[in-house]
Length: 314
Image (cartoon, rainbow, N blue to C red; front, side):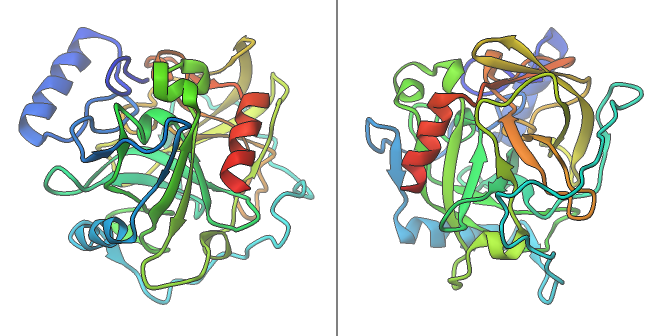
């Protein structure tokens, strides 16, 4: 499902050729699940922290006006006031039959990451809103936001579909990745947290879209759902199956057809059928920066990811 070097990519010669052609024609994406590699970059701190200047976010927001239609007056979802509580009842999440990704309805707390620094904006990864004390936090894969530097042209569009941004466009104010990712692109640390804002508004995103809970040291196997945005699609794909442990540091999710653009997609358990919100057990990335067409991976959300979350939210 993802690519290896320089961003997420897919396995196989056919996909490689298609990727090269796409790069030549569009100059947008390099990776299988993932992000463009020639975008504007900033070095940030060696600790893995980057604070985005306000003017950079405004420029990204301006660039996005040509890419999406912001729908005003959209009815907001009912936002759980305590998003870190267990859902009162959950979807059993039976395995997809056949075990392959298919089109699913958008979820307000999940959306594509757009990149605006190479001509027309395009999306190349997926992220989700997770509960935090400040209500402004996203989680995605580290390779979606840092490749030889922090991408400075990122925009998040929750609930995106068919060119419409029903909950607006959100730009980063800060990004945190592990220093192990900065120094060595360590696949066991392929996780990033982003603080975001909506230009011209002080309302935190969690109050607009709701938020997923986040689990650390999650057990496996667990019934789970993955929902993400292929880079060539205007609607999300989803798949359900049980998670498995690939190793002590990698979570595994078997499902065909999660292509380029789905890097960073949340692996959700305990999904509330009423709101669609669940608990993030991982994000597509990790081993081989995501996997191949049949198997996806995530860095395990153990103590290291907990420490990164706590650093990002302190």
